[in-house]
Image (cartoon, rainbow, N blue to C red; front, side, top):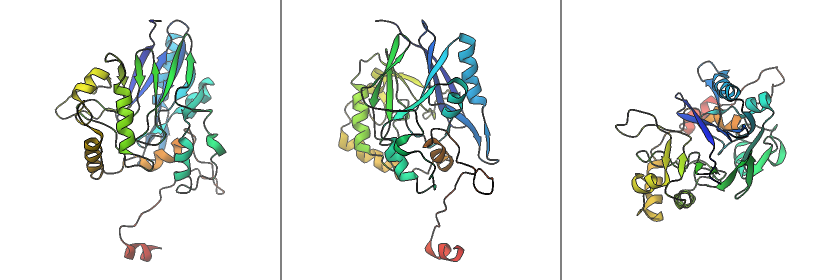
Length: 297
């Protein structure tokens, strides 16, 4: 079957995130991948403009959004999955190992409201699982390394790879989050790069490589194999891991790490209102030295 999906990309420059609207043009069945919920950190205001743009594009084309797919629990933007599901009736899916990610972060954020066994998500997805989309279908690929739960979605000649790879001039995902593993990331990258050369790879982010003026989020297997600065052909696992770990040791935490994780492990749901009627995100503190920690306790 030579049918291909229609793909629309929505770039959120504040978080450098790309959301995709993917549809079977024959039936109008559609999916949203990695949606963004607008969040202003200074004012703690939540907004829906990014979600509304995706919904409007689908409505204009007569597409029905049937599923919202997350490549992982993002650490750099809040997910708009729950809002899209509420507006469309779509189900929300994520990699089955999200339960491991939730187990790490649940105590940090006091997230006692998390439903058991990943129940905040409608479906926990496994490697090789097929997700019909009209007359087309996604195949789930487990691609861990950035996090333990990362997955990619292949449909026809297109693969949505989350944070596994960036554009060739920028490299690959970091692996220093809990559950991250540079060895696993290398193997996931090689799995993706074993696909046919013409396979299109759609990225979750672009940060612009050195000297590049435009944002770009689509590449190919051939281009990555030839030119990725951290993972091109000829770089073995040991060299990749050493370079990745050295690079990760220099990186600051993502700007929206703390708000993002606690919303995204809930599938885009906000924390519940507390006994005082306040709905709030938690910001756990880490003192720089023990003297200060003791003094301020």
